[in-house]
Amino acid sequence: MNNELFWTADIGGTKIMLMLIDRKKSVLFREKIPTPSRPEPEALVEVLKKEILSVGKEIILPAGGKTAKLGISMAGFVDHRSGLVHQSPNLEWHSPVPLARMIGEATGLQVTIENDANAAVVGEAYYGAARGFQDAVYVTVSTGIGGGLFLDGKLYRGSNGFAGEVGHIKPFGKNRSCKCGGENCLEAWASGSAIACHGADLLGKGISGSEIKTAEDVFTLADSGNTVARSIIHFAADNVGIGLSNLVNIVNPSCLVLGGGIAFNREDFLERISKKIFENAIRPAVNVTPLKIVRAELEPEAGIWGIYALLSGQVD
Ligand SMILES: [Zn+2]
Image (cartoon, rainbow, N blue to C red):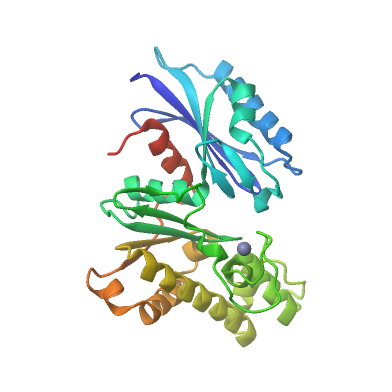
């Protein structure tokens, strides 16, 4: 039992982070591989199978070391009990996929799947920025917006695993479709994709004269003094802040961890979100036990460490 090793994988839209970790948290293997460009479930299973089986042959496991479990963290609406991915807009999966069973049959491993923000809040609560807090919320603002709830000292998943989906609260504007199939979700108006989309609509061209394609293009224009770019970013940050103030009112966390490419890399964005939360949440929810708003510490491996903690059943 003490020599048990754990495979962990974080499946993103463009890359997969794969790690093999022992009971003492030592990483025996770490690799980033590209997500298949057309990520049909079968292609994804094949990539994981190939990598895991070849590593199993190549690396020398510690004496008695045994790999039996694989934990997966991925964006999407995931039922952790059945291992069914009901929907993963990032991978363009719009009908249920029995991913845990498929990967289990291909690799011989016992497979657990968790929503990436759910895994990340566990990672941050056990080993990162929310360590020591009994009630913490993790929110990622990157291409999309995701959330995970750690309440009363444990992960809160809701009845099917879909709790914490703060990116899909609404409405935040008019006439904008969201990847979830709904309309006018927070994610459709304030995520990295939304900033890019808003930038392309209002700015047309970026600093080098090329088309605006990414949120980073809008941030670069804003940094150069472009007031329209700046207002697009302020609009997104303010809406994230208002959305999260609602979450604070409902959940009353003592720690709110902000991660994801945009919130993590842009201090000014994070500050504006924090300001809006403090302005809009009910006073006691931010004052009685002062709400701590912090940057994630484990990026980009928060999901990996969360799924590891869940898989190994260990807290330190
Ligand atoms: Zn949505």
